[in-house]
Image 1 (cartoon, rainbow, N blue to C red):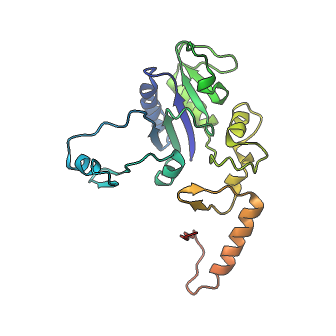
Image 2: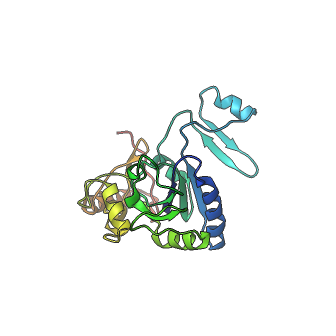
Image 3: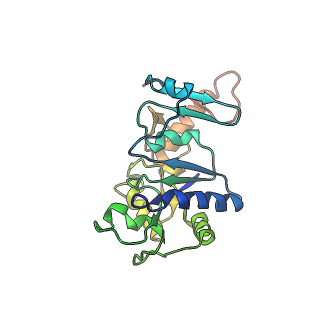
Length: 235
């Protein structure tokens, strides 16, 4: 799954742009999921489900046309990604995420400058503002086309296996055209290990070593067949 974030000041039109992009990207044949960050929480409704949520319990909702999970604590995006199946993840906000590219929604340059918006991760500006080295695009179709070409998502592990200090450095190089997403060693690992929902960084050598060891052990079990294996282990 690839991703792009929409970042800008409050009330800059991020949601409006996101809705327009969803429509356009779907027309282009992509399945799209959305992640939204909010500092103020999410509005609830006076329903039985909301009353359960007010108890502080995790709530699972299953309806005829939709399903959801609501946890009573903050979780980071990486822990939620396994729940999503889409070609493209559209992230509104989350400006502190440094491991995916972004579109800046700007009509003017903020008084506090641009550093807080991480312009080196920007593939485009949507609005009237102009940033050197970043194209300003007003057409939703052109923006969707650019997203198809430029969207990516690194694992956010900051494992250093690629030789950079963190995923943000590699992401900035990818946006600048100096590297490719395939340079992420962790993405190339044949095995993924998570502890408490957080993926561990693993270079290609270690990944292959762990994968071959596990495969060898599993082949000794009666009923073994090739496929995707899921192992849960207390450590």
